[in-house]
Amino acid sequence: MFISLISSDQVKKPGKLIEKRLGRKLEPYDIWYDGFKARSTIPEKDLTAKTGKKYSSAAAFHSGINSILTTLGFSTDKAAAISSKIQVDPSRGAGHAWGAQMRTDKSHLRTRLTPKGMDYKGYNIAIHELGHNVEQTISLQDVDYYILRGVPNTAFTEAWAFIFQKRDLELLEMKDSNPQKEHLSALNTLWSAFEIMGVSLVDMKVWNWLYKHPNADKTTLKNAVVRIARQVWNKYFHGIFPQKDVELLAVYSHMIDYPLYLPAYPIGHIAEFQIEQQISGKNLGSEMTRICSKGKIVPDLWMKNAAGKPLGISHLINAAQIALKHIK
Ligand SMILES: [Zn+2]
Picture 1: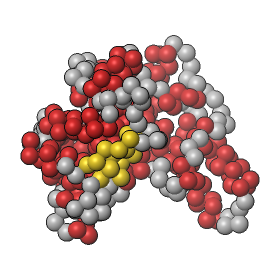
Picture 2 (picture 1 turned 90 degrees about the horizontal axis):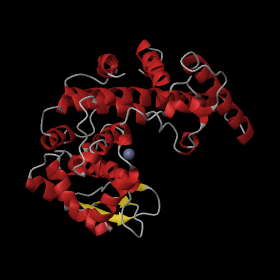
Picture 3 (picture 1 turned 30 degrees about the horizontal axis):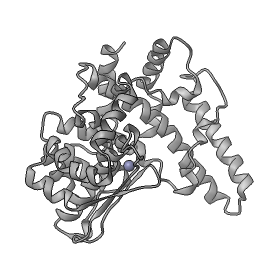
């Protein structure tokens, strides 16, 4: 899936479009180009002024969960049941969602607060984490067999976190009325999938190398990571990017810290996109409850139940192709 997406023509075209929008040739760091995101048009300080006032403490964010959930389409009862199973704690890091294991227990949403309340960055992450907590709660409470609690793997909970996070402005009543929003979102998803799929290929190849070299020390491992990053870049990124031998795809320390975790992000983007198309024009609350109550079944079956088809890149590729006709 990753290789067919990153070597497709549909990735080359947004590369050209980004060059046109930037008025210069692509630089390697443009793998993180974020100009397709709707929020970059609103100044961050205006957003922080709003979030700081609304969410001055962890308790204030907890009291806000009910209304966030009803805004997303959950019924009043369901919203209350879910929020009673989430505890909000102040965090030292950026934010985190820790699911419960017992039905009587609560999941924890850890969120960063400043003395002036939640800044926009903290809020954006808190909404992402809330997506995890809601998934964790439904897939623990509403699954018929306890052993099947959860989702197929990390990618599927990331998909829900992305779906929530993308609605952060709408939840602040700052809904972006840009008619091109849907097309921008398709290109943004495609471009971020391109970046993280490259990183994920490096991750998989590094672990493959490590199994073949069980006695590697830190220096040989480091050299292998850097060499593999260059190989992946030269094969899939050079051509869209003029530079050769770039080592940027080796930048994520997760690769060694959490083995084979990075591929969950692009699979999460693919799942997100399929679910977004499924819930478009429908009630997010009831669709999420229906989808997450199936539990930890095999990924393709989960996705077939969720959105009618097994996991695949065709939805994303098609939407990006249409988007390229609308976005200049
Ligand atoms: Zn996440």
